[in-house]
Image (cartoon, rainbow, N blue to C red):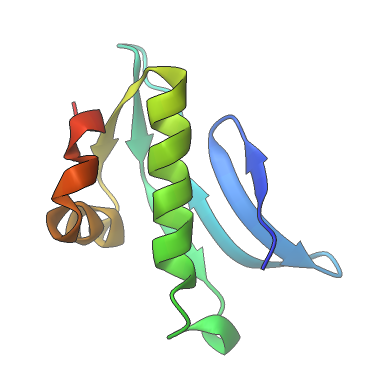
Length: 89
């Protein structure tokens, strides 16, 4: 699956339909808030959400920002991936 990477969003769509997405808007204090993860029902169970989160973590790290996860999936993902906790605010 090919993802489209934007500054504060990583997503995949097909024929104009959103299939998967993670959003991490900029906050005023130099951090981003990982506030939304979505995977279409047809793609669930394929590790897509984890790929989105890894992409978001890598993007946030490259930008030198820190993250505050508020999406329940993001919170759980960071608990399972302590090697990526360096980007947490």
